[in-house]
Image (tube, rainbow, N blue to C red; front, side, top):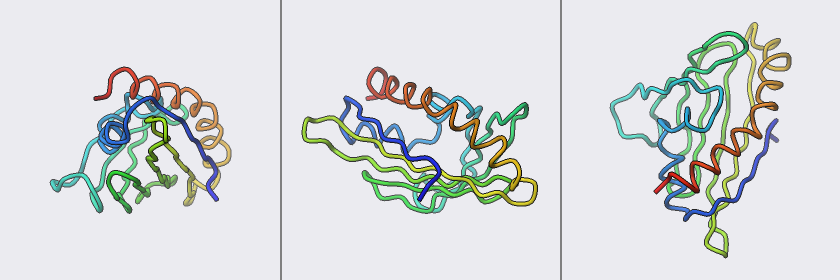
Length: 148
């Protein structure tokens, strides 16, 4: 069970939704805390590559490295943090709906290591809880009005 489970329905085809979500360079467009994203490997984005996501957490910009642990186009993906005191775990799914729209499902949780054991419940989860509704709104807006 993840700490956060979110679902949104968007008025776009599953292919368009997958194309947008499977390109990590789009994260800063719809995640308020994402400052920048850099792929660390030369291979095409898919299973295995690492990305460095710089996030604004509390009062600091923190670089976090994540590895793609599942990549099943055009349906699902997972990523897991590999360094730092706070390591995110995210799983996403793209599901076609009968009316031509698409459901995006995301599960998100965090592991604390060292100081991160204190930061996760006191800083990270509260920030994510505040940020998620805006992220969902931004994702829906980007997908319905600018993707494709």
